Image 1 (spheres, rainbow, N blue to C red):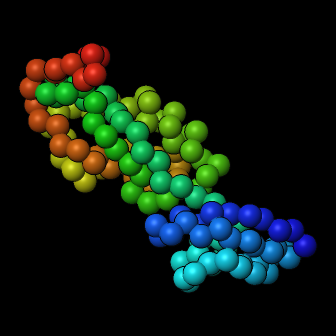
Image 2 (cartoon, rainbow, N blue to C red; image 1 turned 180 degrees about the horizontal axis):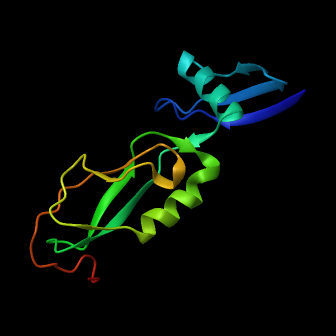
Length: 129
């Protein structure tokens, strides 16, 4: 039997969790709500993450648009997703919720804009164009 120590990210409490793993049987202690147990089971059996980043915008009032994965992706695919995001370029205008990359890195998950970027002359963002 394996024991794993985790900190729950299911709510702001951040409960320290102890998960005992015996094959597919997982017992969780330390959680103060059901979300803690759900988080621990998911983190052990199928760890996944939401990825946030930015994509270059051509012809926009700013040079980059913030983006995120529409859903969690498998943790092991993060680097593949980031490679595809780094290669991507979009044209202004960009609206919040626009799908900028469909099925990113073969995950079946889209990359969506989290900021609006209108057409215009690019201005410096933090001293960069």
